[in-house]
Image (cartoon, rainbow, N blue to C red):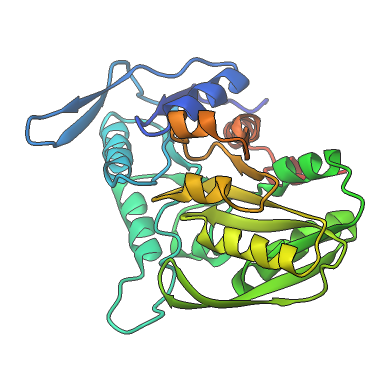
Length: 318
């Protein structure tokens, strides 16, 4: 007998509506009807305006700030579970709190583990996310994790630039594995910017491991928050004789004065994805930020999950 597939329904969290609409369009199915009520004291209550009984539900919501984005996702999961959804997949393009993946000093929480526990406890059957800050965070979940790889989006774009002397760079030691993964597609050298921090979001010193003289350098990172690390790394690379430097970053958190920092930096461009919706006014006025869509990748992954197909083949680059 042929496989029987349950009805798929896609719903958007209020923090990721734009991307969810694009995913739904790429998938070929409209978003489900959902309402978010906000009480006078600030409490939120999402509810579905249509039946989800027996359906495979995909709830699309990044968990960037404000924290209500995370809480809304948890409440959406709980509501779907209590409405007898057959299978609930939390589609979290950007998994917030991923940088809190270990105890790097005494008496701190492991935030990534706690968020994983919350999503699981709320009733999610599966989570789908992209470019986790640390791949081992997948092990924090006791449910299946589909970890999508952003290189399938970035590599074709980098190839289209036809950079004559391409070198891949990591802005810190922790990102060296990610940089080497990109470098293998181009048979390119890898250089590393070794940084020391005074405290979070504040760099004390930075030095380069490797030669960038005459090179067109592409910095690879997963999260751009204040843009301080990338802008300082770019300046150091240019000071050491590079022809050009640009940055590729999956999740554009862009807090504080990040937009201004990018515009005032020596970066030729900052290439990001739409896992987090940018500030419309600041993004519109930016001359350096280029946004690549993740919609077709997530739509393909959702289709394959529903039809019990392979996810890994979505990341094959010729």
